[in-house]
Image (cartoon, rainbow, N blue to C red; front, side, top):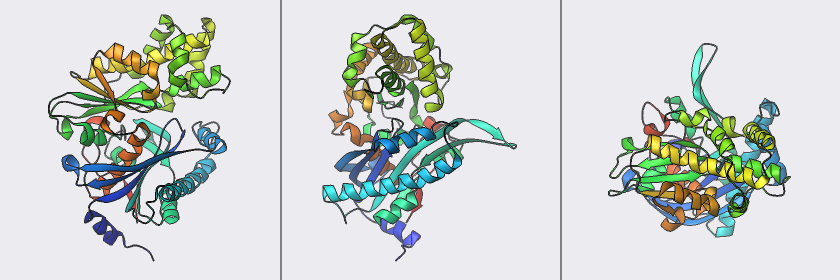
Length: 396
């Protein structure tokens, strides 16, 4: 029997805790990460308890098909249309498997899915006299709802874009409710495919929060490693290749001259600027300089470190503490270099009881909970939106 939209929203709003499954698939396209959490309250009074988390890797064939969508030359409208439903099926199956394996089937109230970003256009463009920004995440929520039998909140970014924002960084609101401090100036630094920071001045309110993409995180490092090892490695394990190499200052200075780094926040970036085409240009320059593979990896790793540090110096106030997350937090060499370069206390999400692979799907669960509660969950100081809005489309 079909659920009544208003009745379902009313039920969710009256329930505490709300038990929510969050799903996240990031720019690295490693797989879909899920987190199950109980959530009480909202805004600064929001409390959460993580119950379970897991990541299901994409099968190689599916991952390759997703990567094809990132190339306008190699993709098509038909491919995007089909993959929207394919990923909906994959995500729905992942939720069902997750709940079976963790023993929580029949206890969940809501699914909150980010989807897979296919393309992101943060700067305004004009088409047929109409100027707009745009973003596209796929993984059809109606399919997830059908396969799981649960209501779904999804497609969070588009409402912020409609309100004049860039739709990213989307996790800034979650950082605010998790890490805000009355005494310390906190920078929550995520290093995924793209690196982004949320700056929380001591005692801040939501309008004081600043967040933006600092530049590439693992995207360029991973792309270089894959090509230099002939696909034998997908990433630099523990940063060991970089540790054995030497940074080439000329190549590093060229990397740091990228115009994105000079743009003032709010700003976001992605594969459009630091994807395969950029990696190929880096490798071409490295070959012309006669660099060893280890030197190339060391240099692009330093590029990530330096782009983060310079962003702090140029665009943030004083920083007392950095809370580090994302796949880059597992790169020991990268973390060591970041500590040395920043000269402040650096902790990880794990120090706060948040396993690394759980942070982003937990964030989706929190955004989904706020969405059904009708609480604005974007951060205009991060995205550039003209007002606070409720992000997320509800499928009962």
